[in-house]
Length: 192
Image (cartoon, rainbow, N blue to C red; front, side, top):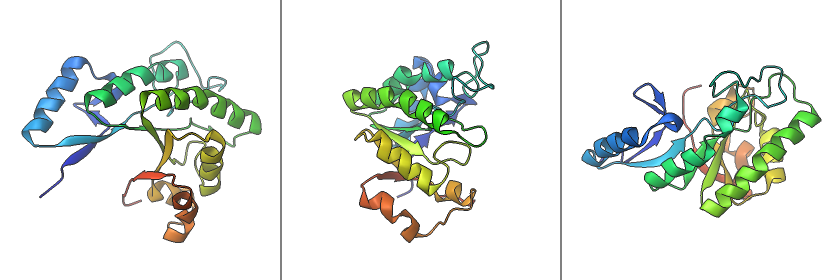
């Protein structure tokens, strides 16, 4: 039986967001030979500092430090998802860089909302990965984000290992609220 789908993040030492059309064709040919499909495009979208961060720069092509560069790949990531016939794109809700303020939280929400609308129009599901360094670090902050963003195009890529890394519970009961709201669409399982 074996695996029939893969979640693509980085291949041939290249982030999936930076793939050329030739790279995509090469990977598809390889997957076709193995009778495999792509389940999720594990994009780096939103795994960067906020534009207002003192760590932000527009001088380098950095996916983590140049938010404009990072966000400029959204349309290409959607094209890549279309190419592999998957509706699922993993994303992050920005790097918090310390203790986030309410002002930073509002900035983050306002930055993501237009992309949620774009995803709705493109019939894509953006899978938020809870991450210790991002605004969706704790269970409470993840709930707050999903509640405030309130988009059918945004679901949760539940990662208990990432919750574990910020001392959050990793029991089914702790995640009941996510399932109750129909937010869980995908899951990562790893040894934290």
